[in-house]
Image (cartoon, rainbow, N blue to C red):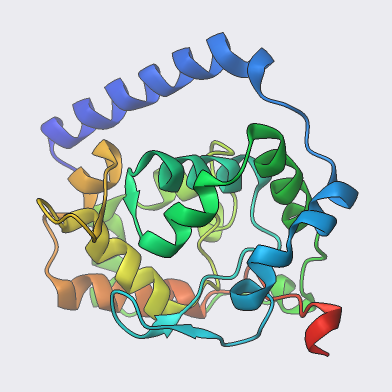
Length: 221
């Protein structure tokens, strides 16, 4: 990883740590039972296995059951602030209070881990291994891309590969009113890669066993 990217990551982490320590007391505790009652706006996409979205291209919506609560809150806030550009998600996130976000995050984080999470990850090809090394993905997303070093980072292992690819490309997108994600760390990480390389990494990470799943809501059973 280049010195410039290392410096960007270090400064961003330091800033994040400072903000977290100052505002930790302002973050409400989440209640999973309350979150279940508030999840009606989520289950139409995230509660249906293999449900596909069509914006900005056709892809499976991400699995959020088993995802870390702190990350879910962070992602919802990013949509609410427009740092993540997605009209549907921004409209939903804008309607949520901090307590709503915390409750929803607690609900999805409490979902059971699939039995397949215990399986061993297959060894990546030499080319993919080199790409992952170049991106230094494990430095944030942790062992087997499933144990982030900070709760505000997502678990990636086993996530839908087509969603991961769309998300990675979004961090490369600039000056677009409807598409893109503003994140200094991820922007610096993905821009050195071609889309073909990002897709290769996404396909491998999506094949890894992890904690994520889609828990079907009772309304759809």
